[in-house]
Image (tube, rainbow, N blue to C red; front, top):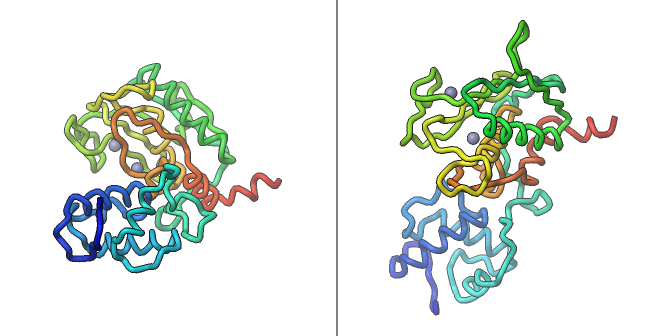
Length: 260
Ligand SMILES: [Zn+2]
Ligand SMILES: [Zn+2]
């Protein structure tokens, strides 16, 4: 059992510091980019602790003491504290600089021959999920004729003309571009699955949902629960989160659309 106090600069309990950092990332208090040395009680951890103490009405000290540890051990909902715009903290979604967006409601999309039928079904399901929460209507174009589709989806390999080169070992599993480009590329060198339960492959639906967020104009969110959080692990299935919906609402002022 922990007793005593732990403050910035202390190095006698690296295991606890590591646990706290992990915990604060999960709860939305510490951005994964600010993890630094995982066993180092640094400024970022101190700030996370202060925010936590403020949120839970503890004395704001930035120091880990028995009150803090007791509070952290209370069973809680898994939704991070920074997930809702109803709190006094701002939403964590972000928009691209200059807020590029589509100026039309009807968008066409094409899925090319690099995509299998089951992968295609996962992508279409993701498109429907966005359609459900926005004013957009998506139309599938099976063939590219005289008119170019607004959005093109393919699985690519290696150096394919984008900044990211897709390989089996690269960190990037997919990428997409903000409006009005409408391009989504999945890394074909990675293992993909469509049932959302395969622990050895990335989920097409979840990834498509994320990449379509970019296509519609959302940038990454620091909310780990949001679909726009930048990382995904194998076997992980996620759905749209209120942070994503807040973001798309803000970008397109959707209330205006729903009220006509
Ligand atoms: Zn690409
Ligand atoms: Zn992304």
